[in-house]
Image (cartoon, rainbow, N blue to C red; front, side, top):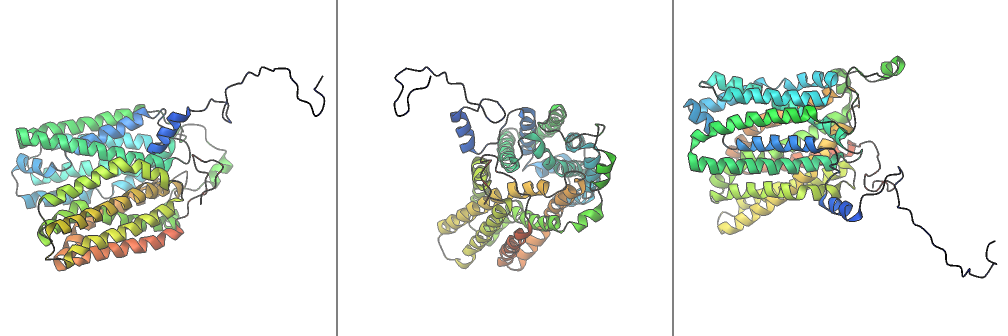
Length: 457
């Protein structure tokens, strides 16, 4: 019998509290662990060990030759530097159609198989590097390597939606960017120390090691079991009525997708900006500003270390906003950084430390724009593409990287030789135009992975 109204029962009741569960009946992750991962900006890595290891191994091997591939070719072939440069350019140009091939393979076999094959192709290319002695052999080897790289990046972005929970794509892209910078930096440091101790002859070891890392990455990708399956070929598909209504893969359908083409145009502006460190920075700082030969290396260290250390945390915060907002902010920051890079041109008589301080500040802004832009652009590259038959979309997105990387050396160095202000002006204007393009880059509305009931702003 219940207690009378208005009076409290004095009988002591023992209540056994059951452990709380989430909506799926599973116990929640312990709060300290979840808080630590969230603060670090990391996605949920459960079940993704081989996927993460493949990226780590691949980036470490890439770092071994990041800055010394031309040094190896000079030592191995004894050809003039101009001939080596021309041979590398020819190989790069011959590899430009690789994304189109990757589009067909991606739609037919899925991203996991294409990524594994791409790693095997790169391994074969670096194996050829061990025996080259002439310019045409350099072009052939670099054609194979660059074709593998183009195939890899055509398919690799499509793996990210398969590795974790829906809505965590940007966190994964940020984490991969950080991981690859750490791996490339570690590999470059190892090769630099070894080269200083043992000379150029030791680079043969790194060529063989790089081929081995690509083989290892291929095995890891092949044996990795994605958290979400893309319905590989051969599995039972939808009814024929639904299959007939699904979008078919065609270049005409891609050309009608104006929103995705705007994304590709915005990414081309981003690619040209990303060519500043490898193409423009050193010659601008040392020859134009005469600010000291030590400064370009220091600026590259600032860029690499900042991307590696801060990308996950900054991406975690930017993921609370729609990707186009992060992209717009990134391009605005980039425009300011390019203006700051040009400031020392007006201070020819200023002390060297002032120019160095301005350039460090410009590089920090440039790095922040890279951190904001890269994960968000990659996220849109997969969320704006059709779920099925998206190979041509990914190939076109990758083509913006291939064209940008091929055009940047000619465009940026020609403008610098004409007038040192011109390359920075071009990059700033392109960044501002890309900011305007972001208004059309609306992704499908989805709940935030960490705040399921809170709508995105």
